[in-house]
Image (cartoon, rainbow, N blue to C red):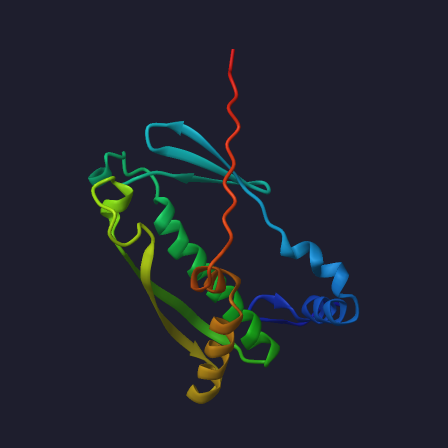
Length: 178
């Protein structure tokens, strides 16, 4: 017998995850740590290695890149959008809400790209503001969907990472290659 699904998710698997998280928080503690390796390829191209996935990063032609891949700040927007999609689907599915369509439009405003380019020191080179607009068609009334959206935004790991100060611990190891 196949397990029931909603929004493409196995409801029994979600129930087991929820049960495990509630009864044995240490079992899910491993999900608090994530990692990636990023290797320079050439020019402004890099390759990120995440689990068994590879992402290519680049720069647009306006920044002397070859425009072959999104750049890091674009991936930040994509990561936030993906996190919010996962959260919305998770929260809607837990409430038994079928989603027919879900799309997010994200727009970010860098505070001062001139800082990154070495052309100034006013402001900072990161995002000043990110706007996210959700477009959803689902089997629930607007008030319920707004509750799901608010819960999604409040509990988004990527959203919280962007909205809060994170301790960044940079290290440098100089290595020589033959």
